[in-house]
Image (cartoon, rainbow, N blue to C red; front, top):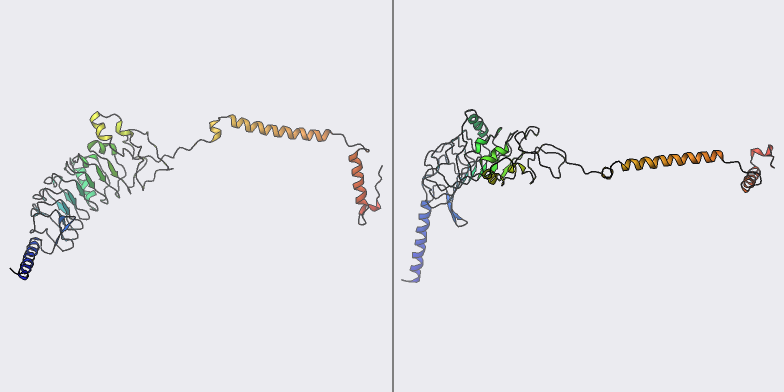
Length: 358
């Protein structure tokens, strides 16, 4: 076979492989390798339903900014190897059981910026390895929680393997412990930018392995926010008052983790970084020098004052009791000479009245 024929064969082979790869990629999507991982980019393609064709080896899929509204059971069964799934910026309203059946390897799930009004507590049951879930900026989640709280629902979500839950910007007003009671492995919770006024942090820590909690931009009622606190032994470093718009606690606010709990609970709670929200107490002011020496400073000031007064009185008495200078004394002669000099001036008005001197 000539060299030219070999080159032609190679080109045809590569073309066939490329056509095969493109045929396995979902329609209107782009398939590529990102960080050596098979990746499907289907964002902003006007999908109303998840694609139902594709290569079953892809590990990541981006379906953000589409028109997805409802997800049925086995919606992603064509992608059984998926580890990362981005469904943000869609119009998804409900999450029912079995929606991710067939894609049970998902670890990272982004459902932020949707319109969720119903979330089944067990919709993640088919994803036993799920570690990250974002429901951020779903404005109806707060209403969902309020309704479930009235109905005394036991769990908001059941996902023992979940480590990170993001619920920021969800219009949440209350956050009772049952919301995370089905997430025993939870270590990071983000509930920033909500409408929470009171938060029983100790109760939340007791039902999960919480290490980090983001509470920024919540309108906490500082007077009542610590009602469920175990202890008041805490301090605020470098702050004169508690700023409710920047809700964080110093590292030393951890005393509640070790009080009145069993050994097993202590092992869980000893890892927490936050146990309560500080009250708006002013920072302790450093004592001045006079406080350290007690009343001695006051006595010293009083002694100096009376000494000055006494010295002034003695000087006055001395001036009043001193005899006038005798005519022949040096002081008297100096006065006489000064008077003669004054009276000897041509413009002196006292020339007509000569002064009789001794």
